[in-house]
Picture 1 (tube, helix red, strand yellow):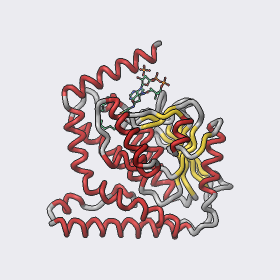
Picture 2 (cartoon, protein in one colour):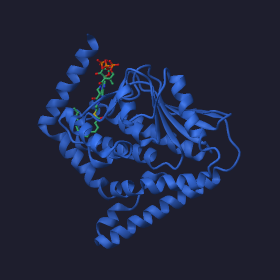
Picture 3 (cartoon, protein in one colour):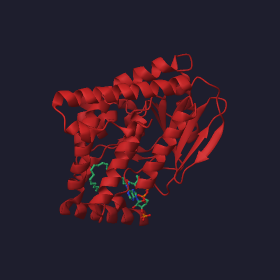
Length: 310
Ligand SMILES: CCCCCCCCCC/C=C\CC(=O)SCCNC(=O)CCNC(=O)[C@H](O)C(C)(C)COP(=O)(O)OP(=O)(O)OC[C@H]1O[C@@H](n2cnc3c(N)ncnc32)[C@H](O)[C@@H]1OP(=O)(O)O
C-alpha cells in the first residue's frame, strides 16, 4: 500500500472529533499493518534490478540489496509534477522489491534538488496548483512514512523542497561546499508544519526555530556542526558508500522491529499531517494565487535566470 493512499479524510471531516480521531487511529493501524506485511515479505531472496521512470532511476546493488533512487531532471532537479510522481513510483517499487534500504541522490553534478519548480506555480490555475501541492505532499509522505531504512546522499545544493526530501530520510551525507536549508521565509512565504517536521526531527528546537525564521541556508560544514547532516563525504561515491554503511548498520537488527519502531517515532507527525492535508492544499492555493506572491515569484524567476547568465 502506498502511504499516500491515506485515510478516507473526506469522510472523517463529517465526523465528530472523537470519531475522527478514531478513524485516524484506524488509519495508523492499517498503515502499520500494511508496512508489517511488507516487512515480513521482505525476508525472501534478493533481486538485482535497474529500472527507470521518466525522471528517476532505481538501481539495486546485488551484493548489499540496497536501492539507489536517483533524481534526473536537469538542470537542477526542480520538482515538477512529473518528478514528484516518479519519486512516488520509485519509492513504491523499492518498497515492493525486497530492497534492504533506499538511498536518495541526484544525477546532477552540483545540485541535489532545487526544491519545487517555481514555473509550476507561476501564472497558472488553481487546479494545477492543487496538483502540484498534492503531489509534493504525496512524495513527502511516501518517503517520510517508509518503513525501509532511508538515507540521502546529498551531492549538491538542497534548498527548500530539496531539504524537505533530504530530511524525510533517516540519515544524510553531504558533499562539501554546498548549501541546505528551508529558505521559505527568505522568499516571504511560510512553510507548513509538516514540511518542517523532518527538519524538526533532526535539529534541536532552538536551532530549528532560528534557522526557519531566518530562512537560513547552511553550508555543508555548518549543517554538519548543527546535526542537519550526519556526515560529510568528499565525493558522491563516498556519500553513497557512507549511506550504504548506515543502512548496513541494521543488518543484524530485526527488520520488522526496526521498521515499526521508526514508524512509531513518526506516527505523531503523520497523524497531524493527515488531519490537515486537505486544508493545507487549500492554504497553498490561496497563498500561491495571491497577486503579490505571483509578482514575487516572477521577480525571483527573473533573478534566477539573470544569475544563470552571469
Ligand atoms: C518564490 C516562491 C513562492 C512560492 C509560493 C508558495 C509556496 C509555499 C510553500 C513553500 C514550499 C516549498 C517551496 C519551494 O521549494 S520553492 C523553490 C525554492 N528553491 C529555491 O529557492 C532554489 C532556487 N535555485 C537556486 O538557488 C539555484 O538554482 C541552485 C539550486 C543553488 C543551483 O544553482 P546553479 O548555479 O547550479 O543553477 P542556476 O543557474 O541557478 O539554475 C539553473 C536553471 O535552473 C533554474 N532554476 C533553479 N531553481 C529553480 C526552481 N526552484 N524552479 C524553477 N527553475 C529553477 C534557473 O532559473 C536556471 O534557469 P535558466 O537555465 O536560466 O533558464
